[in-house]
Length: 78
Image (cartoon, rainbow, N blue to C red; front, side, top):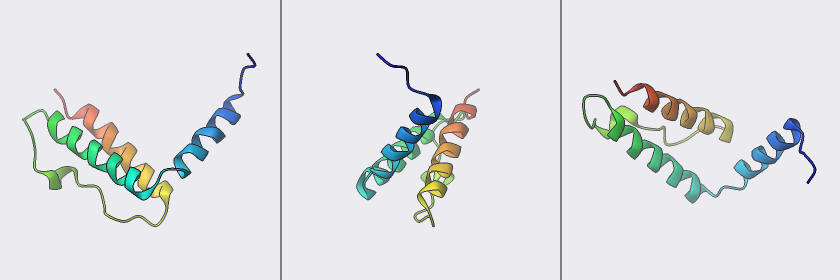
C-alpha cells in the first residue's frame, strides 16, 4: 500500500468538508453545542453560552467557529 503524502491527505480532508450538506453541517453544530453544554465544570449551562452563530460568510468561518467550540469544551472541565 502506497503511503499518501501529508499534502494529499490534507487536500482529501478539505474535499470531504465541502461535500457536507447544510443539514449535515447543522447536525454537527447541534451535536457540538449539546456536548459543550454538558462539559461545563459547574454543571450544564444555558444553550446561549455555547451558541454557534446561525450564519457564516464562508464554510471556513463556520469550521473555525466549530473548532473553537470543540477546543473550549476541553477547557471547561476542572
